[in-house]
Image (tube, rainbow, N blue to C red; front, side):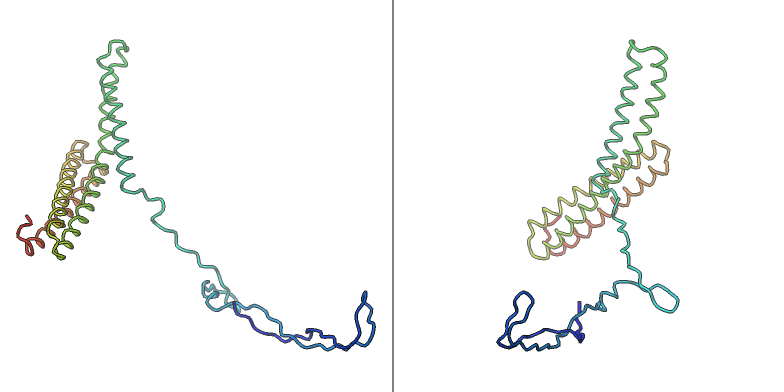
Amino acid sequence: MAETPEPSAMGDQHNHGPGIFIAGDVIGDVHHHASPRPTYHRTARIDEIDEHESVGGAGRARRAPVTAEPSREKGRTGPLKSLIGNAFGAFMLFGMAGYGLATVFMPTHPTSERVISVPLAIGLTLGGLVPLASSLAVLAELCAAGAANAAGSAGGQGREGRWAAARLNLRQARLVARTAHHSAELAGLVAALVGFLAVSRRAADRAQKASDRAESEVAKACAALQRSDPAAR
């Protein structure tokens, strides 16, 4: 905040002379000298005013506070949470389907309940395939990210001449990329089992793209290492 001096009629009072003040009465000779003292008032800085955007008004410009755009990242589920949630959902549905099938072979249950358990188990199994496909897609994406990181580390260590560490990271990248590849294959199989529903088809496409991305990163790192270190295979 800037401070601007402003003259004022009132100022400090200085008393001189042999007199004194007692209970508001002046005893003796006292001379009063008033010296003007500048007063200060605060003014807003320009940069503080610029924090607001101008809105139209009649005869003058008014200011409205600028509100920050809400972050799109809020409310988004992380990949690990999505993987755990989908896997848990699939596990629960498959568990209930298995219990329904086991009910068929339990003579203690009524016949009507044993008969209805068959279509119920089939429906629960098909329903469990949907979160299973999503969990496989998320797993493929996580493996693809891990393969890309390991391949990038292998390339950087190869440029620095640390061949042993580069080969180790390259093996790790290949292993994770292979996991992504198998996850994509399983996601495609699950999508075929549920009749290529829209949700499962999108999950299978995501898994396949992640697998391709992981294999591409590993191939680039392998080619870079082979140019500088023939022992890297």
